[in-house]
Image (cartoon, rainbow, N blue to C red; front, side, top):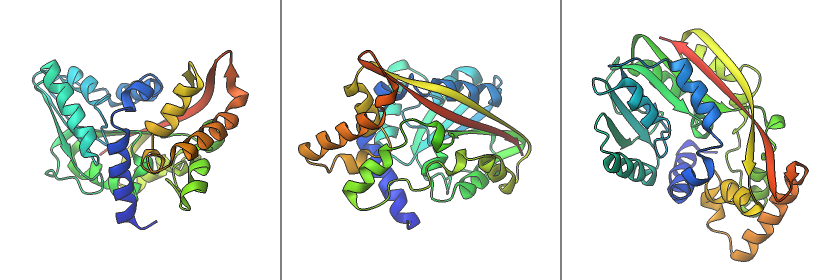
Length: 271
C-alpha cells in the first residue's frame, strides 16, 4: 500500500475510533502498557516523548512518573485522539504534558531532546516502522531509552480474523503488515537497524475479556484499526460482519462473554 494512503487511512480511521477507544481497550491493553513503562524506568525530572499516544493512556502515567520537574510530549496522527487527550489533561489539570498531531516517521522536534521515547502499540500502523524507530533514536539524548510494544504473532491473537472479515467487504487490505513486527525477533532486529543497542525483548500472553458479543464487536470494529472501513458499511453489512467475527471467536466463548487470547511483544533499546 502506498505510504501516503496508509497514513491517511490511519489518520481518519483513528479519528473515527477516538470516541470508543478507551471504553473498549483501556483494560485490554494494560498488560502491554505496564510492561512498556516498567522497561522504560522513567525517573523524576526526565523528558519523555510518547509516539502514537492515542488518548494518552500511557502518556498520563508517564507524566505522573516524571513529575512536575519533567515533561511529556505526546503525539498522534489522529487529530481527534489529540483533541480528546488534551481535553482530559485540562480536566485533570495536568500541566507537565502536551499533546500534538504528528507523524511518527517525521517527528517535529529537535535532536537529542528526550531521555525516554515510548510507542505503545502504534508501530504496526506505520508505513515504515524502522524509519519511525530512527526518529525515536534521533530525538533521544545519548544514553536515552526507547521502548515499543506491538501485538505478537498472528497465530497467538484469537481476534486476528477481523482484518480478513473487513478486507472482504472493502476490496483492499486493512493493515496488511499488522502482525509482522510481532513475529520472532522482528521488532528487536528493527531496533538494531535503527541504531539502538543493549536490546531487551519480552513476549507476554494475555486474554481479552469481553462481557458480551456487543462488547467484543465494539472493540473489534468501532474502537480499533478497521474503524474507517467499518463506518462506511451499511447497517446490513455491519450486522453481517458482526456475525462472522463472533463466529471466528466462538471457540473462546464462555457463558455470555468471550475470553480471547492475545500476545504482546515489548522491546527496549539504548541510544
